[in-house]
Image (cartoon, rainbow, N blue to C red; front, side):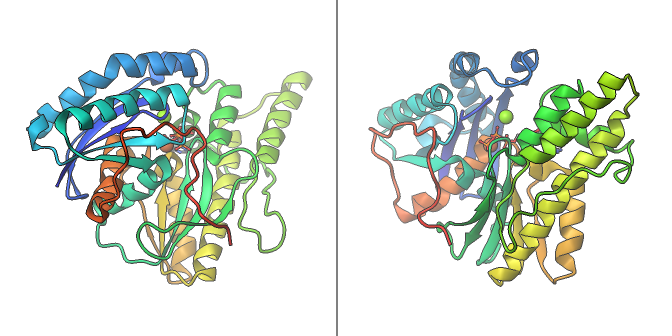
Length: 338
Ligand code: ATP
Ligand code: MG
Ligand code: FE
């Protein structure tokens, strides 16, 4: 089964050809990071325009690199939410037109279902049930997967996402956008114990997260130093911030896996690329006999291949979308919360 998968929910225009949900024949990612860098974040109007310029090119490149012709495709898959509406619409319009012209099924994929499936690309035999920690620029969620295609929300951030906290602090430290990789790099030169930033554990037993207090605390420390004319050490701030985020994420992910009696934690989303998070979560999970799986760095951030993998399982179920499918900026993955 050859699927053309398209992802344009934020600032990456990506197209991939994925066979049988596991073989990545191509995964072309055209990032707009350089365009948005000077604004310190993604500018939605610019993102839509850039997707429009890129979409036909990335699809053609994906087909060429895979050595696949349009006629060899079995389905066209696309992210239809959540994300920036104008950005989503570019990929969605392209996918609908392609599916119609080729007379092949259209498959609509939830962006987070895609992030979770990045793990299945490289580990197709991962056994259920499992707990996924989805940490990205817009989401921080603990998800229980009793079986394939079923998602139960265990906890999520009440304010900022973990990636957002990295990005915002990095911007104030002058480290550039996106901030996560910069913070990770700066932290290598710092001491994680020099500055003790607050960790929000919330009410006893809660699997929710909160990172806005941490962010404010780091920023007010920074402002205090600046006002008093005192020197501050960027690597120590980066290391302290990273440690506070990583510790809470790791602890709650392990708690969730124990609660649901899962022996596997699947790490997903852009922040899953963070090496300190991988290290701490793995060590913490191993103490409880829990196994941690993560995608390779390129598959952690937005890409078409993860969408193609999620779409394969929908294809096998005959879970197709009508050509009237619309973009849903706040699309939810969950039926229930428990
Ligand atoms: P969402 O998936 O929630 O819609 P998004 O698609 O914008 O948001 P992703 O592409 O999944 O987000 O991830 C981007 C985020 O990952 C950014 O916040 C970025 O700073 C963060 N990130 C990327 N690499 C690292 C890293 N090595 N350490 C920490 N954070 C990282
Ligand atoms: Mg991005
Ligand atoms: Fe994403």
